[in-house]
Length: 88
Figure 1 (cartoon, rainbow, N blue to C red):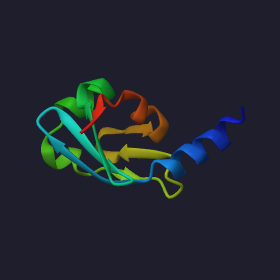
Figure 2: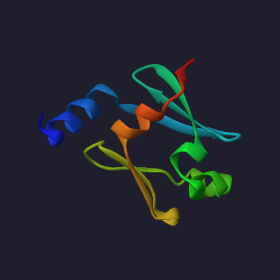
Figure 3: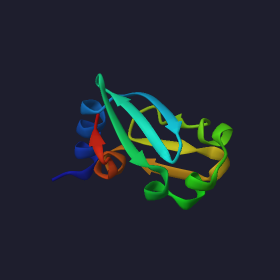
């Protein structure tokens, strides 16, 4: 399995349309479906950040990673979806 091909395929299959934050959760809209993951499962820094900082989320041009520059935090999209608790 070529990991870079896997990331590319995964990112294409899970196009993130929108990310919002509510309470201690990050809400993700991808391909018309909604997902939720607790921010403390992603990073303690993200969980402690104020709402304005959380909303500074940036997407890489290729769609493989998302990041929060102010927090010096970057995560892979594939890893993010592995943390998702459920679709609602």
